[in-house]
Length: 156
Image (cartoon, rainbow, N blue to C red; front, side, top):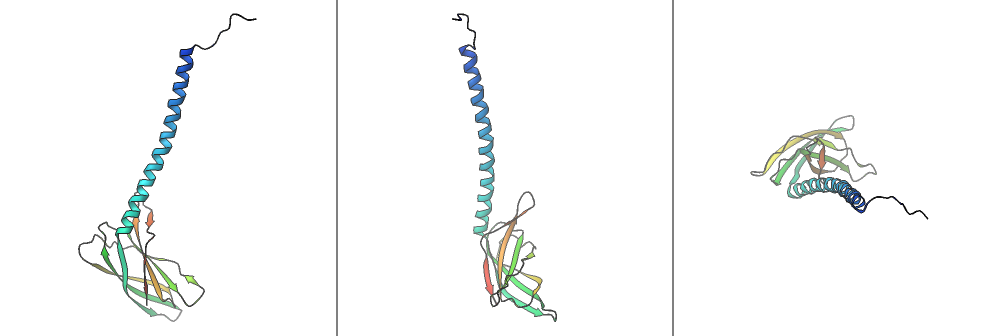
């Protein structure tokens, strides 16, 4: 039998375990903090989207000979206190299987709400649409568009 065994002392072993636990807590905290920060930004934009109300009040389309139309969409903002980056106009044709046409971005700033804010947007689209969805969006700190999940539809 070997009587002269050498090993780590209890103090050194305890210190190594404490050090490993602190490193693990630090790694977990970094991950949790990043998740919480990204989640708070998402909640902030969703709250802004619920507060804003932009809708089309009139749509006038002039048809060109090549099945293209120039549409003037009158927009009205009736609610919301935050400045939005703009709206996306998504035109639809309910009588064909074509579905929604590609969104036309109208990015003029509608601004803060003081009274009912009205503005006009001109866009060129394919002929034959009969409704438009108005979807507001905000600009993130990185310069990306945060498109709101809520929209209003105007049928013409």
